[in-house]
Image (cartoon, one colour):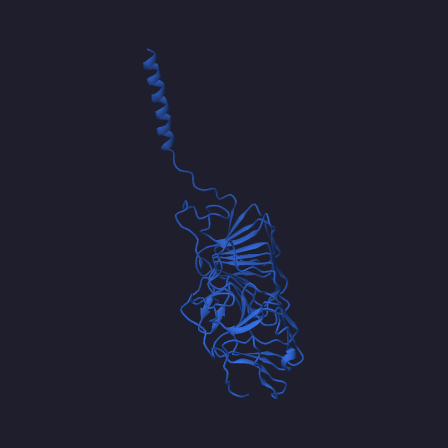
Length: 363
């Protein structure tokens, strides 16, 4: 009898397990997911208890968008842009323990399995396009993460300060984004080569991007940004610089090189570019740095560890042109540093200049 009763109990338990396994699988909860299908046209706050999914192509921010610490914003795949228009701006102040995250719809690590595919898709660089500040002023990004952006038919940024936009970008992370090189044009995951010179870029971390950062030449860069994390750098690991300098400017970053991408970069008359110790300037093919007030235009030009060299020179701060060891530097890779002083001096012949043209065409 005891054995029969035990067998009955086991049978009931097995039946319960079978019936439970036949219950329909509950879909993922969507109570905290907000699908964004219309533009921001009045002051709006996005809160940390929601996951915001951008599904509108060319999504426009035309007023103040304030984003609370800990909020996750996801972009559906491909050509999805967030663009600032008119008086719009984004105020995104995260914290170290509750960062604001801009990421892919496929990213289950941040905000959970929003696309409901039980992890069958994984995020990758270029899943979504970019956020374009489009000439606006006053946007602030603090303790934000920008992940998996840069979708485009040509290299595309993830955060673009186009049309002389200005912003404060501090303590942010840019990781797993594209960017890159298209002919002679360089695009950073953070693309500030058309930004206002009042833009502040401090304490940010860049890793596992194709190309991390491009800037306009007049933007001050201190030594607080980092270009690697846990040993992972970026493919084109440098700060790529274009334009001229018509205000006193300071560059101090010494983890990666500053790469001069303009054919002719001028430090204008009466203005100075100050270099920190151990700063390396690399030059693309044929490029020239013109000091219009002569040697005095470049403060600390012979400082400890300061060098001027070819973009192909991997011996100084590593592989900046992203080709491993496929290319090696050579004489006349770039033109040189021209000491203008109304064209009475000629090219600098400092001992810390490498791989320049020893016989450049006279100006």
